[in-house]
Image (cartoon, rainbow, N blue to C red; front, side, top):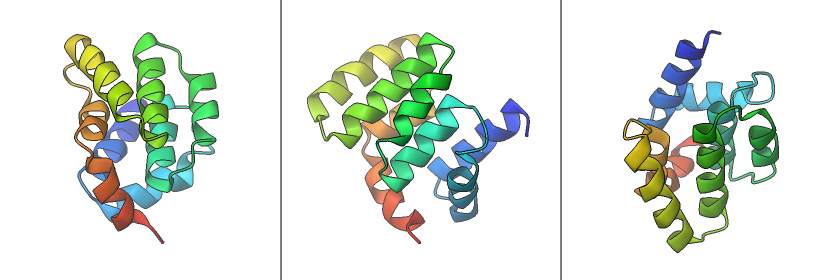
Length: 114
């Protein structure tokens, strides 16, 4: 799948689309996209997935997304807030970071559980 298609699936999963969430979790091991892998880690609450996301992250933006997700999974709310604010100043279109910062990930995670 092309990067635009992967982004569309991540955005749909953020929006609560259960099929997109399942797709994200299924493809996180086969597609080298840091945001896709991070999204799967958040939905499944598998911090170990973030090691792979960090390894494939090619940009500072992607590395920041991974760091924010890692802080979130560690329940380090203050770090999430600080990192997310900085990230969103430079990348106001970063839906996944806004989603993490708004704690929407906790609500969606329950919807995507098998």
